[in-house]
Length: 307
Ligand code: NAP
Image (cartoon, rainbow, N blue to C red; front, side):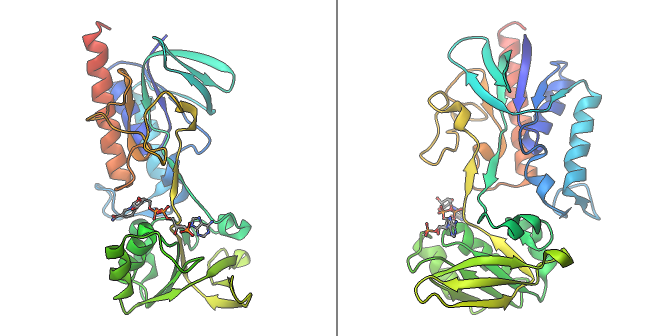
């Protein structure tokens, strides 16, 4: 029987592990399919406090893991395929093996939605990004492209005009999902050029390990063309990893966990941390903060129960 099981090994999960391990609760972290979370997909992280020269994302998250292990946290590779949160102790199925725990911290994150192009995937971290806040700085004076038609795309495009010489916003249809205010702001930004009814067919150039351009297609006319691009930002939404809790943990219609205050979910003893609940900030530092909150709540919950 575990005191604490943490699902997810990104910033939120690792920070929850550091805190619960230091509280002598010997947490078990189930690292999941995307071990290390979003940070493992980025390159240089320059906005995590404490690293004046920046730190590589994978290194930062690996350091957090080592820090947790130094205090006795255990890590289990594998993905949670099922959960039973209807009775105590909670039961978590990790690739066929059931684990019992008194408390659960859900830090399973939200996966970026990508276009699904083979070369897009290969160039992640080499010009392809899903985070303007993280990577915009690298494209000073460069040509930037943003894909998407929602608030994220508008926000990222606007933000990226601080850096890029130009920002092309590519959207697959005529109408936008973005709110009027965000759309208007983008429309009034002279650096943003809208490319409508257009999809991205390919991203170049894998052989150089660098984004150099894309091939676009107008879905109305069928016309295809190539365009030079240095930074390619995909902002077509996120998918919170909550499928395995469906019907048990309350979520909003998009699948993000509904917070019941602090790090609490609708089930006492089950806590949330990081992007699985947060669709707004989604930063390494906010996820870490949320991991800390969940750990403290789990600790207090166990204490109140006399463990
Ligand atoms: P979203 O609203 O779901 O928009 C996703 C956009 O990506 C849509 O325009 C969609 O096109 C497009 N898209 C999806 N799959 C695509 C594909 N395979 N190829 C090309 N385009 C694709 O997602 P979001 O912009 O991330 O926003 C999510 C939520 O967070 C929203 O509620 C939003 O209001 C909120 N948010 C708020 C702020 C803010 O207020 N500051 C900032 C960011 C996000 P279609 O329209 O054609 O489906």
